[in-house]
Length: 67
Image (cartoon, rainbow, N blue to C red; front, side, top):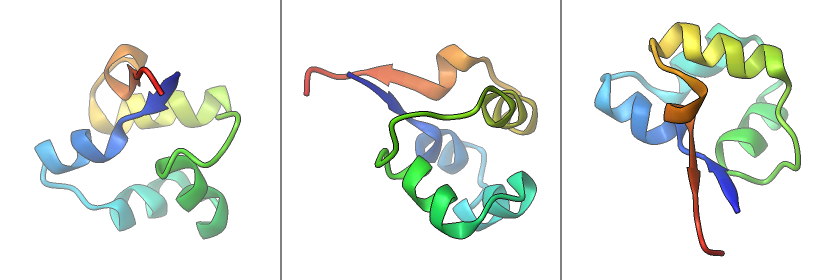
């Protein structure tokens, strides 16, 4: 299973979930589902924006798990 690992990146960079939420401009409900891996899809534009904001690649945003 592929999971979004953005919370680890935020912590490493000293940024908060609230900061990312404000930058993405999403509804809080959708943002919360996304960062807590409770959604089935993430829009490409959100992936691109997260990469830009966190100075990373999509490979850094996601991890494979055995769940």
